[in-house]
Length: 232
Ligand SMILES: [Zn+2]
Image (cartoon, rainbow, N blue to C red; front, side, top):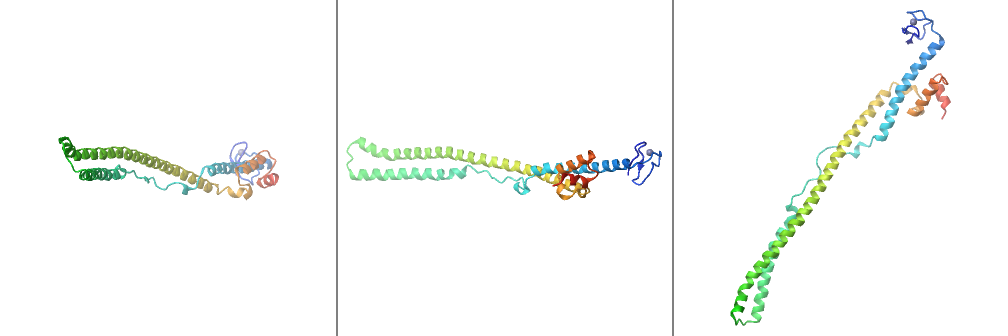
């Protein structure tokens, strides 16, 4: 079916005249109708092929994206880094106190004369000095431990946060990729009515474009002729 060039009424391929206005239907009318008909179909096909060729260059394998948005990287608590310092501080403090006391006791035992008041005061001061020293050392260990643990915890957690963010972004990219895959599949389905118009090796936007040009310029009557002109 095509339209009468005079009145626009539908005209069958086998009509001699237009049934509405009586305009004679010539062979060239039929040819140009057939040409515009095939060009319309090829145009639609080419558009779908072009879209899918573009999609092919954008689509990545869906397996390269995470299939859930869940946070895989858990943050760590402060105590995870701090506990060795927490244990070390009192132990080292205790070792200083006990070890110092033993050393002092040994040196007093070797030199067993306590003659003056100041010497007696000295002996009395030893445990106090040792306790103060032990507390200072333990305090320094705690202080340094807090700083190191906090730094390591922050480092780890900001890393985990970054990786979670990246994986969430990848998941979003995966969703977009899936949309492209769906569009691609959709186009494949839409191509179905047109696919047999063109022999297999010419089923690309470029080849269909060339075929259309040849038909448009009336260098070829139909797809077969156009393909023969294009060659391999
Ligand atoms: Zn007519």
